[in-house]
Length: 287
Image 1: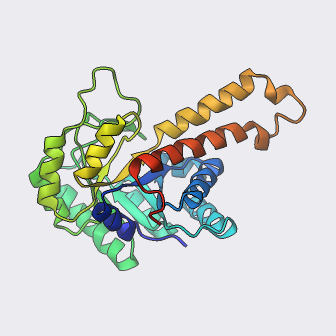
Image 2: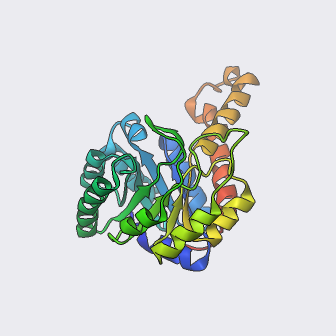
């Protein structure tokens, strides 16, 4: 059964580890992430961007697939299904479809409008028992057409949003989506420490977890980050394993073209990437 991310993230913040949000793109992704979480006794958050939701046929299709897998694979670790970088309209749609967690990304609105819209979604999420993530200071890179420059959040604005009663807060600290450029300056830990100080017990979220060095990840966790989002890294390892399989001509041998065989190396690559991240984040055996 899907759960809100609230309890797992409060537990993570108190225990100084982080829960990974791994974005799903199809059945292989979802199954690989759920099995890895179960095998490692780790809580997990399945992230769905609006673009991925559309790609998979719609939010009801996603909810049906995830709920079916939880039941048929006997998944007993805590699993939250979360809308990633949701628009105002998207947030209402996933709540109706049966997601257990929602992010409203109002970072591109003026702060007062971000607050008003966030309040509305918090009220609905609370009524339905969902967890709610808000964002202050846009995250760099592009995600489903939302382009952010990698701004650094204003701690005072973070405090205002946190006080509305959000479950978790994504604060930009120079992190970006996708691959990091060679001239990337690194994470702004001074800002992170200030944000953690003014937001109290609210678990903080680090977007763009792919490519951030392990020592920076660990430092971010020590400063209040309890949820780290990973997407690009799983895509890269899946693509690499699939490419190797085809370049080796294995799809031309016997029934090697069968999607169950063709996608198997990529599936295993996702599992390996997810396990590696769970080890780094410290979430293994925390279910």
